[in-house]
Length: 216
Image (cartoon, rainbow, N blue to C red; front, side, top):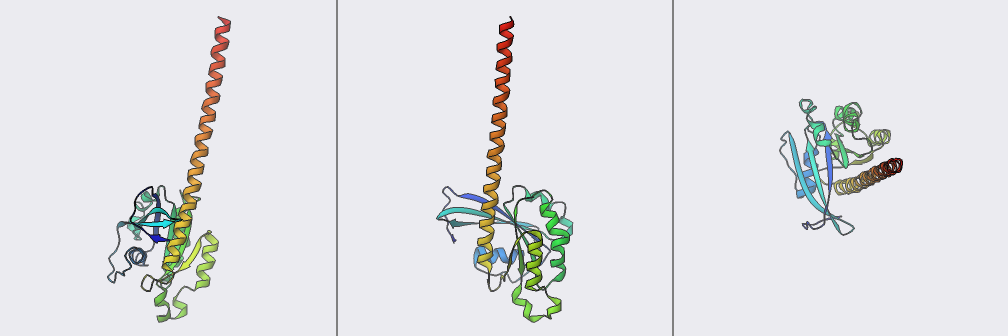
């Protein structure tokens, strides 16, 4: 998948990044969209990024929503989840609490009203893992286990070195397209049911009117 600035006939995908503060959500997005790395940490409130990519030679506008991980935003954050095509739940492999919160907080939050939306689980900051004792880090095996538990695809990556970064975003794009297609199919099915129901009602009304006229 490659970037492209063309905006003709492009579809939009809404990708939501969630996770504890300082786990690298913003760094991942900035590294992917600008090919640069933000060295200074600035706590995110809510930021939106947009990039156009090509999928099967067709432009897709990828809308990346970078959410705040602080608990003070717990009531506001879900407001941006409407019409999400894919959720990326992020934890840091050198922050065990951020990993524990995947099950305790983030997965329940994103699935509360968004069942069926694809989820990508991402362990970040793997470039720092070697600097710490193994008991203070989250192993790849533990990450894969939780991903299987919540039905998510799993990646480990580094925004600094960009290891696995493009692969993760490619997977998020494909997952988002699948979610969007399912939602469109559901909407079309609902419209068809409504049309059929409306047609049946009209037919019943027409029969009633005909019978009434015959009685008169």
